[in-house]
Length: 340
Image 1: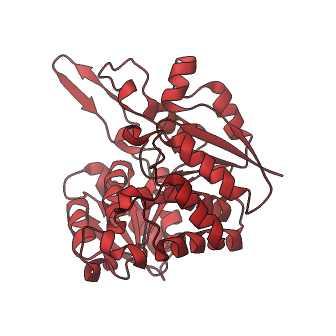
Image 2: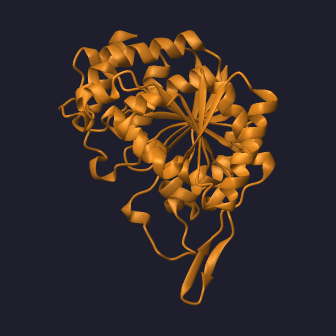
């Protein structure tokens, strides 16, 4: 029996995790167990990523994470534990270097997007973000009245994420960097060009500076097929792309390594302002379950069935508050289950 570690985390995390477990029960026979991460782990153990959680995740077949963080744990003390350290830590511990975020506005929600229907219609892109390098993991510190964060990338790190992007792409990879300013971006571009020419010459490759990419995601989102980019740029651009769908509450993601379990999570945060109110949109979490079925267990038909059930629920009028409606978390779960 496949073993899934559940990391409910904080805020609305436990509510959307419960929704995921109910839907999973209709799709197969899975063994699940809960473990602590983020603020909940800090409250219970004093650290955002306890060793017991790391050990359980390593022994699992897949990890499903809901959300971490909230005002309760916000601090400017550099030595204080922060919930987000749990998320960064588990990615590092499991060797998850590739974050995969599909962005496909559902036709039923075209009018929920802040962009005009004619601008987003037909958009179907995927962001491949490098997860374990760059400025988030470089040397950092304070020196008197200044602070520094260092962006570092190796050739090997760029090669392996580039291969994921080229293997994912249907026709074209757009590699996003800031090669006109940053030395790390110049190395990024050189390595991506070499991997392309030596290993994937039949896939088109285009380079785009990150500021232009940010503009074109709004101006011409249909232009993008697969976006390849480093950690911080990918963090920002994937959240921008999320709004093409009308709500960040709609986007799933997968974090994958070369072997071992993958981690699957919605893109949105813990939304502590609505925790416990029954208003959380579980659809990104359910979409993450579909990605887990596909990438973690090679259950393509089950993944497609769940994605289709989500689409049909929306076509039938399901709208949670973030989508301008009044449907509760329970309403959303029932609507998806009824379409499975």
